[in-house]
Image (cartoon, rainbow, N blue to C red):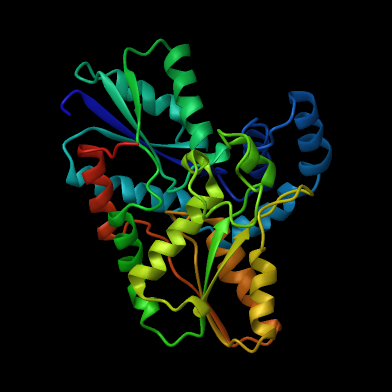
Length: 340
């Protein structure tokens, strides 16, 4: 691997929690055709007329509630991971965000400028495949290499949603919380529109065609986000020995009016409280770094809703962040990548 450099890529964050920076970030993010998969003009109208007039102010308040002296939690947690991984490998490793800074263009140019680097191993920091995560990162990297005429080839590290070592790291990082006295655990994954699931179905005839489509073997599972998050959950609960009646799967962060994957985390949390469940843990395996969606949406908003509905405590299990088991695993995968 002496001729290979690695690029870790996560989603991104605004430069600050100020409304102007949040507006700029949301515009870049939502104008990606892999996020809002509509024709450009329709996408432009949706973003300009329905999102940007009000959403930046709302999101700025949310970002301000989780911003720290180190800045954006997603960026600082990702930088910590990058720093620890680089200590464990002699391979040059760069960190970038799909949207915002540090940007992918600069990172790829830096790697390609090293005379010994002939190949870039692109490592999307997403356990599961989705067009709005892995696909857009890969397409952006390919576009940059082509546009800048960079003298490197691109190799993409595959998703790892059911890999034993990833599950082990996930369970290990949650161990302290799993040993606590809790009544129920919610696996809260970032939601996606059902339309995205159908678009990613390589067979065109499997995903969401039946209630048990995710349990039926199919080539579609290679790119099915819904199947993959359910597999992560199944592997986790088996490893951690969690009874089937003590956990739920839900989906958060819905944007817009389209039908998204269900059930929603917000309604699941309230329903558990109404059923008499008093102590809940929430783990968010789709995120490898704590960010707005975990710290504010779950750690603050969902907690408040759960208590208001009659619950006593809701604890957010931290993401992998720079947990030693995770940093060690990432460094090992950079040295010896998984195969599809």
